[in-house]
Image 1: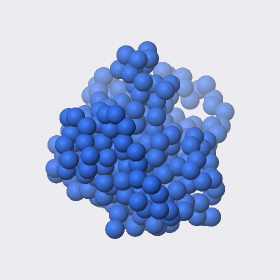
Image 2 (image 1 turned 45 degrees about the vertical axis):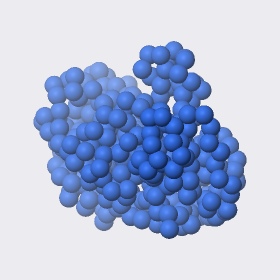
Image 3 (image 1 turned 120 degrees about the vertical axis):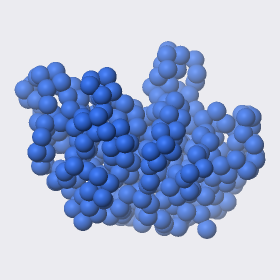
Image 4 (image 1 turned 180 degrees about the vertical axis):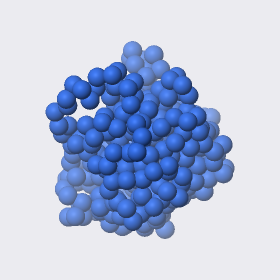
Length: 335
């Protein structure tokens, strides 16, 4: 099969992914073989390709927002079923995290496109119990960004705890960075009744899209919104935004860090945390996150904005992502 392989991390400007013909994946017990139709790109892919996340397997096929059809099945799936494969590939099921509903923290977890081969390929495998049946209301292109940008964004929304602190209606939510996750998050938050304030450095594409999706206000990443926020989410991998976002929070507010990697955080003045402000990170996702998000996304309904790239243009797609040149989400398509 055709695949894009990473042998050694390098700046994406050097085109580190290589096109290759590789052996078909070997199907293990309880796994399904999926023919990939679309795989959305993610900033986590960029962190892996450029070495900001240590390479856990080499060579590796990246990609963890996969949509395809089952070719060989394990119960309860059947051949021909359309499914999604996300970042969390499998967990041990036995540790204290798995047994307490926190499988996202499992120390023995495997991750699609990082510790096992992912979706920058024509075929891939995954445990049947870790794939998602997809709502019929989404095309393959629309569904692919939901499988990480959407699921992780959903977990970030949950981490704000706005549902327990006065509810979503009328709540003021800030979003820092407005790529794939941000443009999905805003749709869920607005459907719940929140006002959304978007801070992003790209004015031509990202601020314009935020306004089209109903942002109450848009500004630059270092700008202070016109009101104090009840909660904020940072999707940009920029540690220097943490004190900026804390200054925008009202007392009792929560700042959620939505990425797997961030640049160093500058020193924080205690006054930024005083007033019972808090910072919480989001690590991976649980399968319940995925199921609940896909159900709510279908009800809203969420509409993703996708820019497509052929599989063998994966380097160019990641370069566009790095330069904030994608409006919405980038998606690799098989030809």
